[in-house]
Amino acid sequence: MKKTLKKRLKKGVFYLILLFVILFVFRIFYGYTEYPNAVVSSNTFFEEIASSRVNYASKKYKMKSSINNSQNVINVDQKYEKIATVNTKSSEFEKEKKSLNKEIKNHEAIIQFEQNSGNKGNRKLQLLIGVQPEKFDSLYVSLSKIGKVQSKEITKKDKTNEYKQLNAKKESLLKIRSSLIELKSKGGKIQEYIELENRILSIEEELQGLGVQLGNYDEENEFCTIKFSLIEGIENKIGLMHRIKVALDWTVSTYMQLMIILFFIVGLVYLILLILDKLNLFNSIIKNLNS
Image: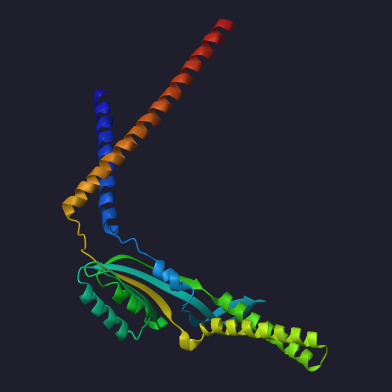
């Protein structure tokens, strides 16, 4: 009996130690995936220019489809918007800025918007870069090597339906304009003529706006976007001992919380079982008295 109890106790202690080690190792690895000196990026600059400049690209491919048990090949012309965001930090601001301009030139990209702010020692450079779709990935990787990356992401949105809707709207407006011009040639009252002219003018303005929007989708204007921020500052490098200390503090705190929760759960289960046992005993006594 004593040996069995000892064995169970050893097994229980082993599992408790194993849980502690797993939590500690998890926190150490998690610390390396997070950026302790992450920059809270100010997107004000990019938000201000978002409505004034957009870049779209297209991708043509063939897709097989089965209609009425027959294999058909459909040509798909996808329109999409691809945006990458890279936020970096460096104590060698001028050196990194030169590397940045070199990479932009090598990839034949263009700077569409630029903002420089701050004094020496606390400078910030923000760029909106347009790059050809086939060179997007290469430039993104190159820019990710500049300075110490604080955060980065890539988003891709399909714009095919929006492109089709704009074209459909344009066709509809062209038909309406043609009908109105035809009506105008038939003559009529001066007031009606003026109203027709105003309506035609309004449609012309809408068509001009649509022309600008559709112009962004033209093959000659096809670009993907990279939002790049370079911040001047000292990079905070965290040593191994500090990481171990932080991980240990977190592990002890989390472990104690788990033990307290486990203790309360076990206590509650024990209490419920005790109550049920008492009820069964009470019911058996009543049965004996009745019998």
